[in-house]
Image (cartoon, rainbow, N blue to C red; front, side):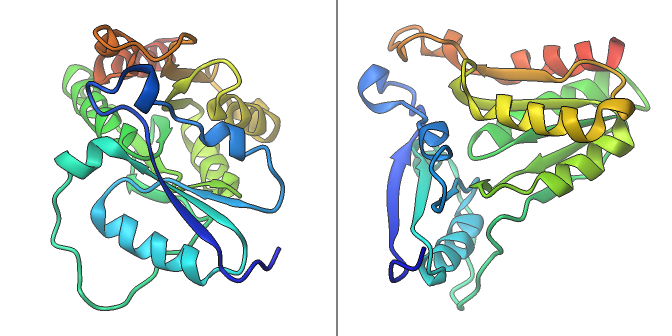
Length: 219
């Protein structure tokens, strides 16, 4: 749908003290709408390249910016013009034993979980994939990885029920059923209004991600 390159920037996700007014992750709502694009960057360098690509894309694009990164992410962003491809996932960390998929600020929790797994299970390596674009998403890159590893863990801050992880899990199950060595794991926010003082219990933190990766490996 050519709407003249309309791009809408919007903050999303938890910030540490937002409660149910400011901490939602609504990407799955919009991923159900044919014709739009939904992007969630993980870092400043990614944000600039993906935002410029979104602005130059003729399709309407929702560009969700995890609020936690406004305060915690720091990088030397190139001053020159550059774009990063939409609808193309990035393999952040190659591995051979389990595929771990996320997007936005969740990537950092997954990196910490992977470090703990590889410390506690010598010889195991985890392939970490940042989807970057939620719609249309890059199922091919994820499927190729799962065909190699035989295992998949998907994580996001949004609630588990009807979350985007369910869509990805269904797609990969259809494509890679005969190669799966364990059930697909989802690590997500709880299906409750986003709490304030109990936010740390709601979040799919590195520990919960670690437990899911370990369950998948030990199945």
